[in-house]
Amino acid sequence: MRATWLGTARACVASCALVASAGCYELRQAGGQLDMFLHRRALSSLVDDPSLTAEQRDRLRVVWYARDFALRELGLSASESYTSVVMLSRPAVSYVVAASPPDRIASYRWCFPFAGCLPYIGYFDRRDAVRERDRLRRLGYDTYLRGVDAYSLGGWFPDPVYSPMLERTRGGVANTVIHELTHGTLFVASEARFNESLATYVGDRGSLLFLAQRYGERSSTYREALAIERDAARWERFLRALAARLQRVYASDATREDKLRRKEQILREARAAFERGELGFETPQFRVRAGRLEINNAVLSNFVTYYGDQELIDAAYRAFGGSLRDFIVFLKREVAPQRRPSEWLSRWTQARGARSAP
Image 1 (cartoon, rainbow, N blue to C red):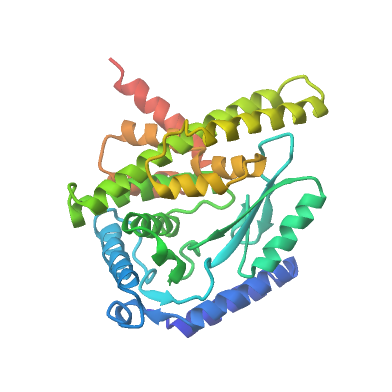
Image 2: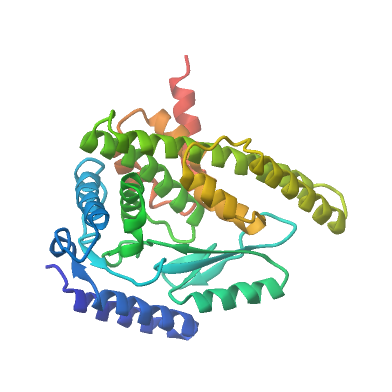
């Protein structure tokens, strides 16, 4: 039987009450989540609502069709996620803080019951996020604060569409829906790097499959998504090379002071390369986003969380040799129960490659 929204909200509050001993953070976020649940509206009632812009109504239709595609064609777990909408008056649904030591690319971690340990923490109120960021800065950490337009409840409760999502391109909306539904399909506690890398991988590839099917490979929508994908690959290569360069400095025998001086020099050089246009971005989304970003270890550790296992997952997908849907089913059956999914998948991929070698 499907739970009502109010029943789901009550369940959320009840579960959060069980972890109240961990501090007031969970209760504050439970209150914010409850408010979201109580202000949800059925997506079907808004797709023709004249109070929304034509672009917002179009993006809601993209959500509807992308969700159907994800469940039908990719085999992601069915749920009530993305069948409701929360309209917000702010540009982000949540504000996420990440941190890293100034002389290492290593995520500061926050630990919670059920979810395990995470390399980021989210707040509904930006002021709370700023306070946490400032606390970490006072302790000497590099920090990164960003607004997000979607997040997953990990399959515990249905995820709504948050109105800031509707500011994305069609491809961006589809990518977000498939990314978050992947979290609801396969989630390994305390393995954020694997979880986020997998959701990013499936979101990127699944959204292109959806756009090709829905709009056609010759459509401007599909071509725009391909251009954004190419820019994402450029940005990934840039950050991956930058992180590797810094890691070599941090692993050296130099003094801490020398490491920090070298770090600042490398970051200045990276900024200059970007400002000279060496990355060759095609789309305004990346030119604007990357141009505003002050890169530090926290930004790079966040990058590692979302992209650190991309090469492993891609190698496993190629070794698997089936469709993306079959690969997701395989991961859900074989990898999800593993305590260290990346290590297990690496061994499986190597063994698979050894068996197929001539």
